[in-house]
Image 1 (cartoon, rainbow, N blue to C red):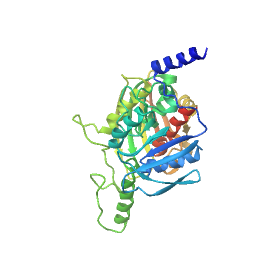
Image 2 (cartoon, helix red, strand yellow):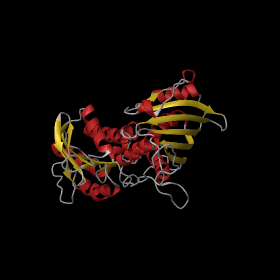
Image 3 (cartoon, rainbow, N blue to C red):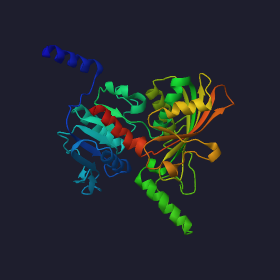
Image 4 (cartoon, helix red, strand yellow):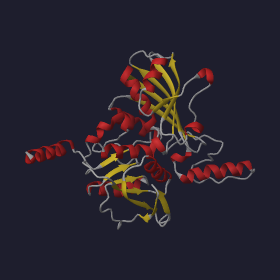
Length: 358
């Protein structure tokens, strides 16, 4: 009987490419990019959610090596990430560094049996790598041919969180989204630059422009990422492709315009959806309110709607300004705000890890 069970397990692993984390009381966890904005947020979330950690390995560039960070009441010294770095015994690796780091270490760790949860764009559209938002498509974790799970772009995650309940109740034909993305999506250096430029302008001094092509303080930049031949930014292309993959709707019509705004944290999105069937605003609110991880904050009479100021540091995706769009058949408008460092990145990654150890 035991032999038969073993054969069945092997066949399941071979057919479905299931990554089976050995059940443990606690796990050895590594964070690559531990001193970055997302890495630090990951440490906070691992502690807040009491993730079962036996050993924690923190890696960064040479510049931050030697720093000491804390998690769950313990202090950990940051190691320099090099080709000679050993990951022996590591169960789960959160990779929140650069695309180059993900490319160089993601496949290597996955092939060595480490479950890699990657925050870069490198693996998102790889057909052998699941792109996961647990509330939307946790079932995709059944197939991990390369030992890697990708998390979506920090704008795609709140978008699909809002779209899923609408698709389930009324179907979706077309999506138009305009994003208003905070500087923390670019990293700590961009956050510092916004603060420094603001201080300089308030003191009637010249500003230094280093991270973005233009001054970001008191300004808007209708460009996130690099421009392609057709005029779309790379961020806009990511939103389109990732939304289709996560929702398993390869022909879904999606168009995006991305704007960088002088806000430290939280991405906001104005979303217009063309549905397959009529849906009243109150019915849309009810469907959204039932979606795990979504908070409906919408009362026009009381001027209640989500704003970055209120959503910063929160785990949920906030939705407001829900209203019927009379300009198209079965149209709906909504406004979405989420913390890009939390649900847009670190929290989503930790939730994936929680799914894998259950």
